[in-house]
Amino acid sequence: MNFSKILIPIGVIVFVAGAWQQYKWPGVAVATGAVVMWILLHFTRMVTVMSRAANRPVGHVGSAVMLNVKLKKGVNLMHVIAMTKSLGERLSDEHAQPEVFKWTDTGDSFVICTFKNGKLAAWEMTRPAEDPENESISLVK
Image (cartoon, rainbow, N blue to C red):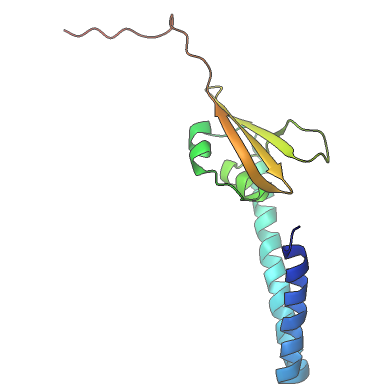
């Protein structure tokens, strides 16, 4: 169960009630202003991340290897979108749990991320197979 959906509203109510208890209406005004500012900061961050992602191709990342290194279990989808600056290519059905997204780089390496309830649960990176014919041979003199 996601306790933050319960604890955050309770925390806001306790904060405003405490402000009322200490300072009456001026305290409520300051506490409400602080809560609104906190909400606006999160909204601004979300809009900034999504506007950067809107200007990039879906499912593209600069380096799949670097993304693989930076990923941590438990981060939310918005954090991964902020790191990649791109929306992931959806591999799972709409509204299905878990959600699966894929990011590919220019070298055809890709990272597949699995999100359960919006949090990163697992990821796997795949590199393309190298062709032995295309390998350059270095000669030592």
